[in-house]
Length: 213
Image (cartoon, rainbow, N blue to C red; front, top):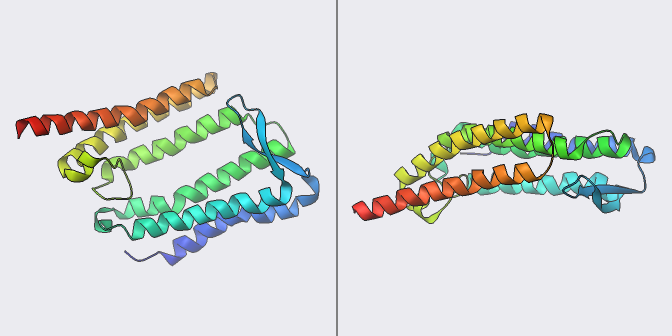
């Protein structure tokens, strides 16, 4: 599949647009701005505002281009559905615009709850990815890439079907819990379940298949 120039152009504009906003608001920004927060939502990482305005979007732009390049050059790229390619084009722009909105809001108004925002945003991202996982066929770039999933297509399909349902359920739980009680402990527990349970599920299938053969 060839690169979609229209998608690339629009997604790049979305990623880099916060630079324009930052330059317009330059005089209203403090000389040093927070770019990282600890698990309690307290700022613990700072940089000069010009590095923030330019550096964060440009860094995300590099990740965006790299993700597209790697996906398009996957040896099994024909197994990646069109919708998954679409997700690759838009996942970084969504993350970029949301992250910059959060950071600028915090810097300029200090009214946004960083922990609640990040929990909600993480839930939405994993909800979207979970919805796409069952559609993801065996490849080397996107998905749960384990030795036994890559070696066995049936294992791959069952693992991704299971993981997709699990991620959707866990994401909804994360979003709902975040409405009433926002902290970093519960998301870490939920994310651990989302990561390790599919791995265990996949390995059990691998062992059962190995025994039967």
